[in-house]
Length: 186
Image (cartoon, rainbow, N blue to C red; front, side, top):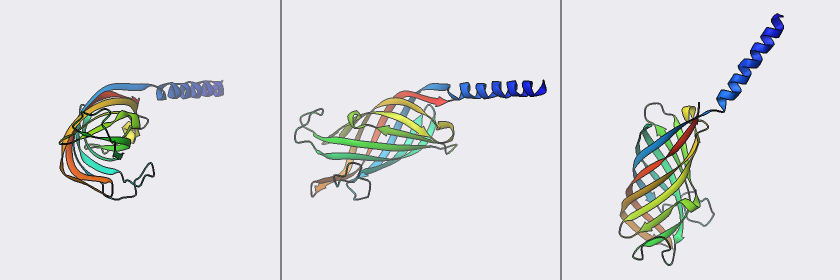
């Protein structure tokens, strides 16, 4: 009789563990990014093998989830000959990908973010603007298994930029406002 109760009790506990691990807590997210970036510096981050290195971005993020530091790599193709999505007076760059790691200031928990090739348009001259669509792609500790999506709108300026051997480079800043939905396992 005791073995049956033990077996039944363990079964209920395991079942409860399985059902709660699949549950997600969903939260609307609003964030403002303040960033600096450097593009055109030769490094070994080249996702599509075209010889153009990814740019490196870093900055601060203030969200309704808390405050974060972030680091990111953003890779663009060469400039398009004629703007497709950008105003006629701007230069448009094709996008390859972006990967971002947000580190929570208070807990050091990390949230991983990805932008896809169809989600970003970069317009340049004289200022820079871009729109983005991306996903939350896991993380550490409280953000393990995180998912969801977001949209953002950014503006900024290049402090200095130029071209060398058909490779664009520059140092600049931007601010980005992002809204979306984040799902975290309970």
